[in-house]
Image 1 (tube, helix red, strand yellow):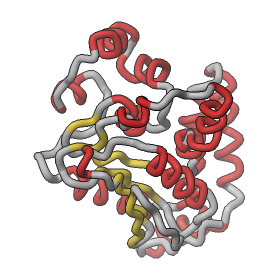
Image 2: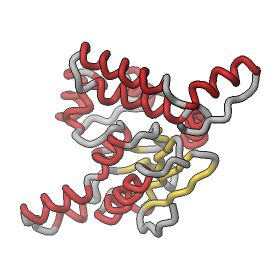
Image 3: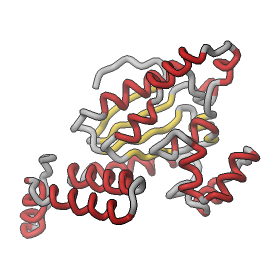
Image 4: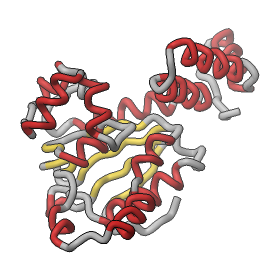
Length: 240
């Protein structure tokens, strides 16, 4: 995927794409250019079978993202124009539908829209956060704008892992590489089952899982996985 971006960096290696929020001079605050870049990036990723896992991180080391760029708030907003901008630039909708696993490598501060981006599938912080940390803790964080440290974020289930300072990106890439080595169709279906299943009643979620598992039994990779196991070798996944 060869695209010139203004406010992010994008690179791919060994099936892992790294998306870097690249406005370190303002702690990677999100402006219109960054939202547009992220939209274009994840729109392209949706059809990029060469990428099997995605890492999102922030440049500079001091912040993953400080959230929205407040300087954009000083101009009056015309409601119809604002709604059109939201429709065009809500990259989080694309991230939510992204088939690849997405890992947020959070180094430094992570506020507002930056946190919404990190708790992928993102956006709708008032709705996503209670589902992750519970109603009470979400209300406390949202209403008080309280900051929490990494240990507390891990304790309440806001993040999955905590690593020493400066090692977040390396740890995220290590995890992404391990995911990229797995059967890509199975990986995508497993993510779909979890993400979509959370929006369904339990019985419907189980049916979705069964349907996806049935589809996996028809793939060439299923046969390759069995052959590789019997032959005691690494499988050669084809994504079919």
